Length: 319
Picture 1 (cartoon, rainbow, N blue to C red):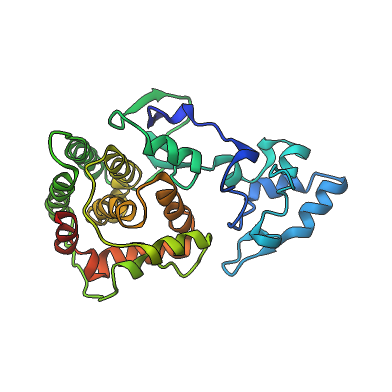
Picture 2 (cartoon, rainbow, N blue to C red):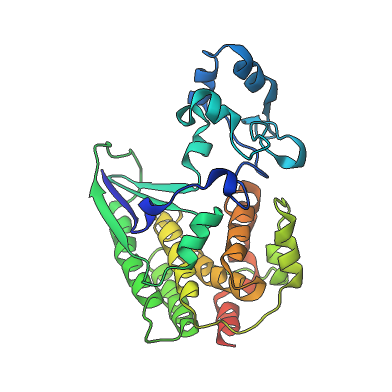
C-alpha cells in the first residue's frame, strides 16, 4: 500500500500533561471491539475500574462514561492516563491511540494526516511557512477493499492537485485564490453530478452555534465574532490546504466535491471572523470534526444554507 502524509506528519509529538486542551476532556470515547476483548483478559483493580465506567450511548455504542467536568475517567490529577500507565498505550482504545490522526483509504493508497483539533497539531499547521506538501512511501499493508470508481478517483486526484496549485499560488492574494477555488469547484462538480444549493435562511454566524457544545470557549468566540476582510496571510493558505487534503478525495464516495471546496473557504472565514490564531481553528475542529452530530449538521448546511452558497461565499471573501 502507498502511504501519503503531510511532510510534517512525523514531527508531531503529543505533549501529554502539558496540553492546554486535553483530548481526554470533553469527548466520550468509544470502546472498540478489539480493546473490549483485551479488557476481558485483565484482572485486579484496573479491570474493575474499566468495567465500572463502561456504558452504552444513544446509538448503542459502548463508551466510557465521563467523570466530573467531562473528564475521561482515567485522566488523573496530573492530566496523565491511568489506563496507559497500567496496561500500556497499545491497549488503550483505538480512538485514543490514533488521535489526532485521521485516515482516508482509497484502495491501494492510504492518506493520513493530523487534525486541527489537537492544539499542538494546530500550531504546527497554522505556523507553516512553506506551502503544505506531502510525501509518499510504500508499506506492507494490503490494499483495502472498496467500491470506489477508479476513473472518478483518478479524476479527483488530478483535480485535487489543481486545487492545491490554486490555493498555494502566492502571486495572487488569498481572497482571490479562494474565489478561483470556488469557481473551479463549480466546474468539477458539473463533471460528477448535479448539485442544488438550498435556500435555508440561517444566519452565517448561527451556522457555527453547534447543538453539541464541547468547549464553552468556542461559543464565546462565535458570539464575539464579526465579519471583516480576509487577511492575505500564509495561515489562511494552510487552513484551506488542510481541508483540501482531508476532504477533497472523499468526494469519490458521495460525488459532492463542491461542499468539500466550500469547507476550505469557510475554514478561512472561521479564523477571519472568530480570531486569527491557531486556537480558533483548534476550537472549531474539536467542536465540529470530532462530533458526529455537529459534523452531520454542518455537512447538511454546506448545501442547504443560502449563506454558504457559492455566490454568497464569494461576496464575503471579496470584501
